[in-house]
Image 1 (cartoon, rainbow, N blue to C red):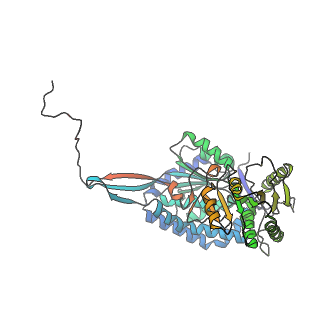
Image 2 (cartoon, rainbow, N blue to C red; image 1 turned 30 degrees about the horizontal axis):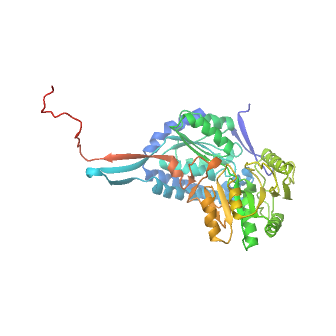
Image 3 (spheres, rainbow, N blue to C red; image 1 turned 120 degrees about the horizontal axis):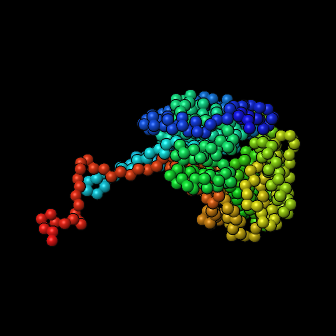
Length: 475
């Protein structure tokens, strides 16, 4: 067993980072020791410290984006948008804390005051994913720090350099080193961190399978908060939209941004049987123009590689499984460079596939399903154990009202991509997509717990019922 973790550039195979594997118990102990002082600081102190973090990241924007592009394989333009999201998360989290977990006082009975305040949990573990290796864990870390928690952050073993860079920015901004700890490692270190008795909760973004395992692990520790942000098998319904070109663009954005490595990516395109040909032709034309290349290519690509060879192999296996079950390829999923994890966008009609796998294909694959009417489209949209995102492309407000009322998902969009989720609103799903702990603006909810106090400025007490009269003799 090696004691060093190595990170490689998926676009080139070059080693870009290496570092020693950490010890979960030691990192939790360090955070536990540093937490009381951080929690004792005023909210304004913590907020100003986190604002400095935003300034540090802003000053390193290009350097940070280059690292994300090299380590995750993202086009450079997309990596820059991720760094921007890291910066913007600070003000959003400040606003969210004030809106969701601020101090409130109101009048109670008999002149008493009722106060509602919030306390931090203590030490929170954060397990981050590789698809947004800075933005998504940062979406947990920033609100956790504002609330007064200490954090032990384990980045994905596929993007450790980005995780280290993010933590270094917190420390450079003045967040004490003990308050944000970095744990380098793979699944073993993740499991060790989740099982540490010294953590007060765990905030996770990743696959439904890993989330289910964590849910079982935490079943016997109800005193610990567990927030799960998991994957999806998201439907995109296109129904009688007059602007075919715009509809096709939204479909392509939904399914293929980040090489399909988004939990909100559209996995299933649901269309009206017999009316789908113009839309599919427009989608196919766009797919033929998509540039798949290394992150710094000129012109900039729409898609880079997926994260590694194992991920590319898995997507190809899932594609072949759909074909073996009767799926009809409309545009083949290809591997242009066998030695590197590049995949071209794949489109496949699975209408006649029996027992379609209800799974998240985490790559550039979109499944087409033809249905007879709009009620059947809604039924098909709900034909999944997941429930993260859904979108309707239609000119009809009435159809959208029906879609919104009947589709089961945490993000439901109209004439927008499935992956159009704003950070200043709650983000989360139902079913296998989460455990009812929405993140983004609502992350403040799981980073602190409410304390209700009834307060009086002087002691007043008495018992009016159930006592014997002191002047009466006992028999």
